[in-house]
Length: 88
Image 1 (tube, rainbow, N blue to C red):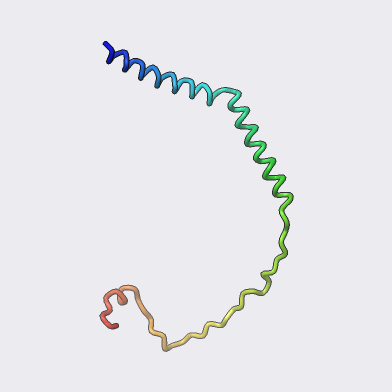
Image 2 (image 1 turned 135 degrees about the vertical axis):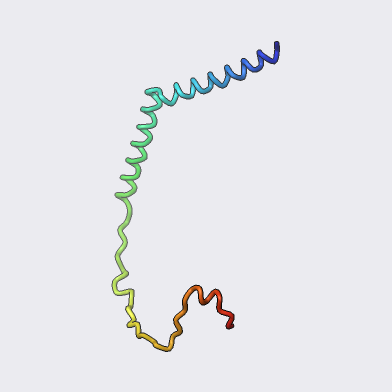
């Protein structure tokens, strides 16, 4: 008898927990609070982004291009030949 009561209480606890959790998350007050928190975060992002300093661009003419001369003396390798090559 006690075993059945214990199982009933376990099941009842689980059912009540899920019911109240779902009821809370789908309530209007929770939706309002979550919307307000998202709005406040967006307002903070806008405020902080307006106060960001703009840095001067100093990356002009940084890259130097080198002419690539075709060197005929380079050995051309193929992937499978490198795997099966016994020379060291």
